[in-house]
Length: 343
Image 1 (cartoon, one colour):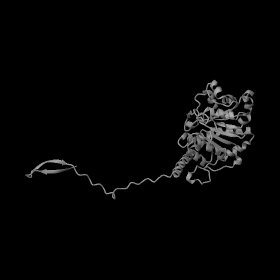
Image 2: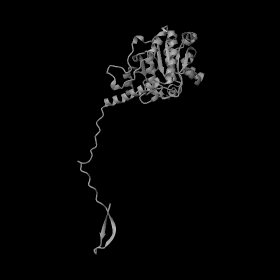
Image 3: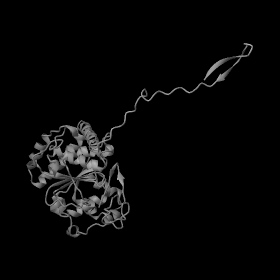
Image 4: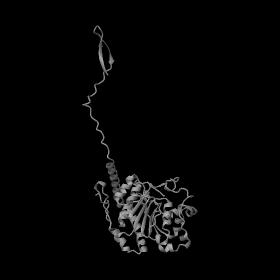
């Protein structure tokens, strides 16, 4: 808006008035800055970027864990348990000390740096493998820092115990396709079927890594290996069984989770250390193993009871049921960021 002076017919000045300026001329199309059009996104390139980010986050978590007091303390706890377990398996204990003394961990490389046929973190000689490993319920590690730290701990444990990643089976019904692809890149074996925790060790020494899982999952695992021979070859890293005994009423524990209730007198348990940095990731976590002498002291009736759990009358089951078997059951519970599940 601009002001224009006005004059009368006699030439005398009159008070100024306001005039509305005409609209400015717009720039020609040639002079206007052109907006850059976004290039179409390649789905495959998008996946590589996302998986690379996840791998870098795992690598960063690994570095932080390795220099923490928690890692050294937890490793000491596991070492005590596995040394005793090897004695029970009549394997040379020196093998474990040699294994623990030869830790070599390379930071997980970016996916772009991984050769097509290689596995981040390296490979191990399967001839030195003393245990196999099964991991249930790790959670959505791509988006959850708690799950990511738990996965990182697992990968370091595999390296420490000289368990090839191909000898580690992993399952969570909540895994995204991205997470499955990342796990395949890391070299672990991703299970395609919800086993319900009912996996028999088939006579092979096995470490079960199952943090913050539903109580029914531990109960099913015990049922699937309900014998002195099988249980004596197992190690469970997961929720404290002593803690379950303290939190649940005796009648509830015996009715809904009878195998946990029956095995309480036949196991040894060492608690994980607690530090403020990793409190949410590994709270209420213990290492459990089953000494033969304790197992043989259990009554004959204990071993004769072999009824498969069904949980029909169990409330607050903390599970994801398999829809193929029970379409109406889709209950879900999350503990400390990691999901609990069951077929």
